[in-house]
Amino acid sequence: MQTTAIELFKHGPAAKAFRTVERDIPEPHADEVIIEAEGFGLNYADVMARLGFYNDAPDIPAVIGYEVVGTVIKAGGPDGESLVGKRVTAFTRFGGYARHAITTVDACLEIGANADMGEAMALTTQYGTAYYAVEHCAHLQEGSTIMLHAAAGGVGLGIIQLASLRNANILAMAGSAEKLQFLRSQGVEKVFNYRTADYVDWVRSETNDRGVDVAFNSVGGRTFKKDLKLLDAGGKLVLYGVADRSSGGKGNWANLGLVWKMGLLIPVQLMMRSVGIIGVNMLTVGDSRPDILRGCLEKTVELFNAGSIKPVVDSIFTPSDIGAAHARLESRESIGKIVVKW
Image 1 (tube, rainbow, N blue to C red):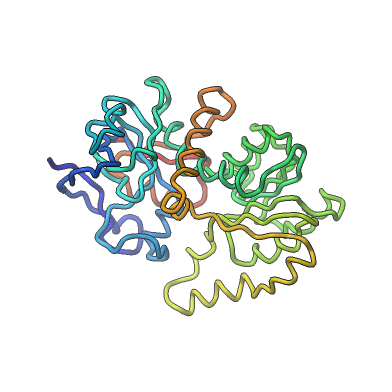
Image 2: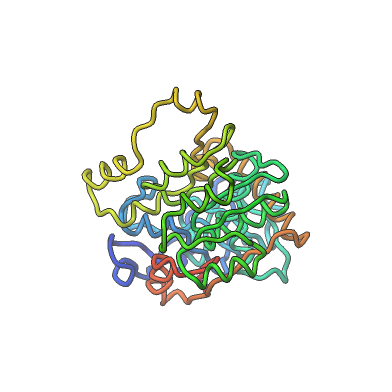
């Protein structure tokens, strides 16, 4: 059996990096299923992979992609037989940019037939990351003060919605007036355009110089050192991305530049201030602790079904417009989830 896939065959600009191919669908292993996808979602890690900056990405040519929504059409073993014929949202360890995707049973969650495809798509990688960061890493407490970068992105909106369930005091940053207005429409009162001024003084002012309980950072670079200094005693910096790396060029010099921006860390300083740094990589979590990944996905679907969270869909593209979809995400003008529909 063959399927249509969008293959990353060269690193570089979005318009020139992909091609459509026909490829065989391998037989699923005992713990896997085949999903006939309605579509797939984009994440910033896809941009990093396309640019050649993501070490975990497979060697090119490759089919990337972390998530699909669709119907399970085949199971490799008895564990997945109950899912056959069911509509699911699923986390894929690459391979998502395909009409048919293979993933593990544990990474699939049944979703209602009437659930919006784009909203359901965001529940896996983006909201799964948000849930892991908020609940497992930050252990966010009622009324905590948090700050976050890229607040209008998919993970950022997930963090905001989850933190709002704990009545958190949210300090949200974004890079345009349009995004700030959108965040206000989502109930976030304290917003800041990081392109207009340094956010450090703003955060200190909003917290009366106390600092924050949790800083959620997907940018890296110089923001890492700034955020670390803005933590109150007992605070945590949760790092789940290094978007700053995408503008630094290739090679070892670019990697050294990122290290220089983020700075050297002396662990005893963390102890003396009683603060912590936690890194988040959902691929690693999925590989090493599939039970935790499964638990995060179950909670996001549960909260979605209950109406407690509602992902935002920025735009829907066709497969032939994959370059435009990537360009939209890379522009950092998008708000919420970008989806490609078959």
